[in-house]
Image (cartoon, rainbow, N blue to C red):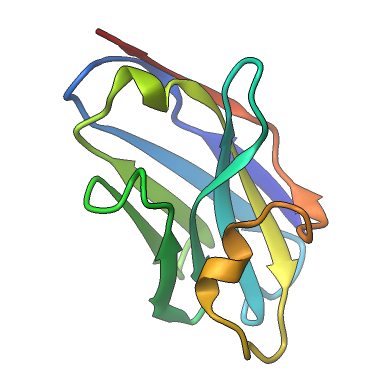
Amino acid sequence: VQLQASGGGLVQAGGPLRLSCVASGDSLDTYHIGWFRQAPGKEREGVACVRIGSADRTAYADSVKGRFTISVDDVTNTVHLQMSSLKPEDTAVYFCAAIKVRINIVPMSVYLDPSPYPSWGQGTLVTVSS
């Protein structure tokens, strides 16, 4: 599967921004899609993830709960990350990634770990000014 992320930019603290990740190349029915971010000098961290076809199967990092929402557009094979109440500490390069999971038997929070994801899109930079 190929992934194309977009939507980054400069936004003032407190403002919203929506990132999009368009997936192509394979049926996404058994995929998990995750959003991750990496700030300068820091490790890549999970932000949110969703199981395609089960939009209620999501997980969020504690730092973004209540502010970020992950959603799936089945028609366009796009996974959106709607970010609101942005903070300067949300500044990072954001990546989307995909992993094929035929049967999900673990909590979705497990997929906030970037390690097992084999397919990655290019990053999109989000800068939140104070």
